[in-house]
Image 1 (cartoon, one colour):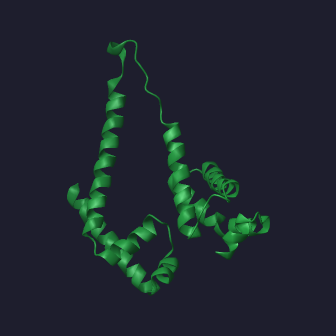
Image 2 (cartoon, helix red, strand yellow):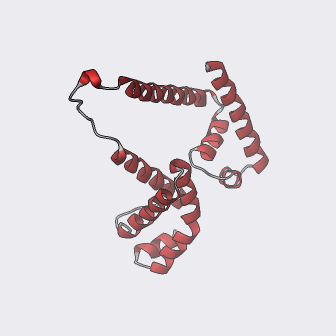
Image 3 (cartoon, helix red, strand yellow):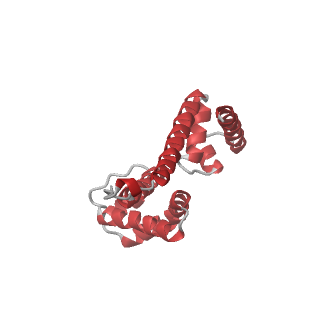
Length: 175
């Protein structure tokens, strides 16, 4: 946290170190959400810009957790801002309801799948769930998870394999 203390005291070199250390991880996380290189770069740079601008107000205990949360927050804000506005249709009889019905059904299927995955996660053993979420939600590597939990990389791999096997079985049984 010495690095953060230096950044809070306007040390641009310390900020550059933070940027160099975490930029790639944040970019990869943003890209996994957007699948768009330019948007991912913008989101990543916005996170770092906000940190620099708000450095005197922020209280950060863990850079990786804070930064990954900030990336997701930036992404969701952009998605919320990009949602299409409600459009009133002047001639309802000529309105193509099929396209909107298909979109609704797609969203409903996504909502159902999300609920099924959440329920599936509650059925996993605690440690297995923790490892799976660190891998898939927090985008940590197997090495990072092993180091963080003080377990072997092989144990991490086994737990993720177990979780994915059960997830596939759950999804197959629902379809």
